[in-house]
Length: 348
Image (cartoon, rainbow, N blue to C red):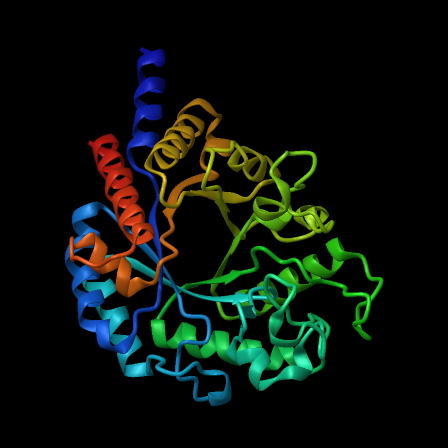
């Protein structure tokens, strides 16, 4: 009888993943209605209960209008997205990618374009040549006043209880020419920035979410410099609060690193992209960890957060079967459908 009850409890834990999420960029104003329809109709049908929407600087901030990208959503439009999520019983978590990812190709994003004094490498890499993405300097005077204003304003527009700060794929930190942080320990610098953001979010009663790759050692794990850190930030994992939700992304193989984060005390989500076979293996790993681990450790494995990386407009079109979508969008939509078919099957 005891064994039967234990088995039933394990099956129940697998059947009810706390996190059944989708990560999506913010839509353009011209596709707002299609996105709202997708939220209201498709997300409940698929079984999604959490939507992480990455705005970055695609919002018309009143506190710092200079950082907004052209064609950004306004507060009323974001409130419409929030209302659609409420109607669909989907938790909306906004995201601004902080620290790294402050540029893409030759385009510098709104923060550093309007506040070059916050740049970790001011005057270096003209037109962003020779680098992946720019970073802001975490020790730049006045930086966090601006960041906290942006976070607070976007969280209010989304009426959210959590905030995703990004922080993935950071390659530029403690640059040798930075007058503020050259020569500083990179793990400590990274941890300090995580802790500053966490302290602010905690003061606003917002749960902190972030990508986990910079907490992993790229050499010892064999994951390399993209899915893990090659610049020495991995030591920060033991220097930050454990109530942060870690989004552990791996797109080519179902790496078992969620177990590492759970063992440190973090709650963790496995994050696939456009390969359905990898996504299904990640789902199976999470479910096995939830059922086969002790209750304390098993509860750290929250579920899955599927990513898209093709733009919300194109992803929704691909999901709806419209012609003209890119191969990446079609693959992302297919992966999403297959993953959540399996999620629904396991939840019975």
